[in-house]
Image (cartoon, rainbow, N blue to C red; front, side):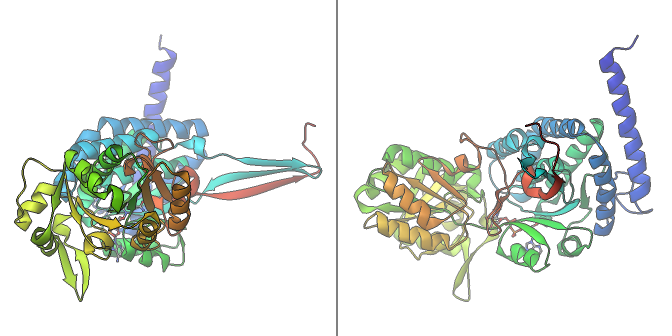
Length: 474
Ligand code: NAD
């Protein structure tokens, strides 16, 4: 006789097989490269159609079943973390494999699931009102080259927990690793009894497919994780857009900080995954009285201090001067500090993980979002000057900022002046997205549009149902 578990396994496998067959025959146009796999199609329009069909099946499932899919996605992401991290590193050349594994495990474990979709109830003399969070349907998601599989996993969990399907347009230079993450997640969903096609993607994502997805009439919500250009394009579509834009997180260090800890935290955060994380420390403003001690402690923690002509050599190597404005040379994004110094003809000893340089407040190492382990450090007269300069460097991105201090008045002053989405005190930037820091994790931090650290709830719409004069228990 079959056990209860065995019967359940057979039922789930049969449902999965039926879902596969239905989605493939309903959505995949004959001759499409993706026909047969049910989630990857040559034409972005076909991705949207397949996602619509899958989303209808998702909302017909119970919340328990939906959470089961989320659990399966988490498990699959964990099991494949090493492989996906290696693929992302090989394909983009960015970052460090162990740090990429850590990012994938972080989002697999700490991205909220269906528990994030909390209803609200109001009761009173006039009856009862219920507010529930409903899905948008199919979401168009544009993802970056800097955290490719991590963002796919994080967005997929959040969006599907919210009852949506998603069509991704990953960065063209991170296509393979992003699509492999999607394949793994889709397989896990189907094996857990869910429909094929909740996560779709064009075979060759590019600017054209991105435009089709962003302007598709059946996509009501866009999620965009990237730099200024893509955020601008998405905002012009006239659709609701959750924009996780660029940042340039400053670190303030005042005279009350515990300097050895501050130095270690700054080096740890700024060198994590070679600084590609958008929340990572990008420049330091330190008061004069503790400045030299901070530099010396940072060097004890793996930073290499460059001076004079060596600073100029690095500028000429990793930055491009475009009509008087510096932009990063993408060949050096997310590369090791030693690689950058070798390419610049700067000598060093050992294996430093971060380059630090004392520079003025308007130096490119301060004003440009470097996305590599090169950190400009600015000597300031006092904490007020450090705060003013940090505000200027963050340039209104509303992204992230950090402070090392034990003076709560200084910390409050900085937090108010900076007005960022994330403000980390006395820790590395990684704590701001949930690594050894309280709170859930995300890799899509909606900055200009204000949703903050996105989760399932961010990808839902509030619907109100009112029952007048009745249904109360008191
Ligand atoms: P990017 O802007 O080059 O690319 C991001 C995505 O946008 C890619 O899919 C790319 O193909 C697409 N894109 C770029 N320009 C476009 C255009 N004109 N039209 C349509 N699509 C376009 O960014 P990246 O280098 O891959 O990632 C790094 C940037 O992303 C940094 O600025 C970083 O701060 C930001 N970022 C922000 C967050 C956040 O949560 N706020 C998270 C990760 C990265």
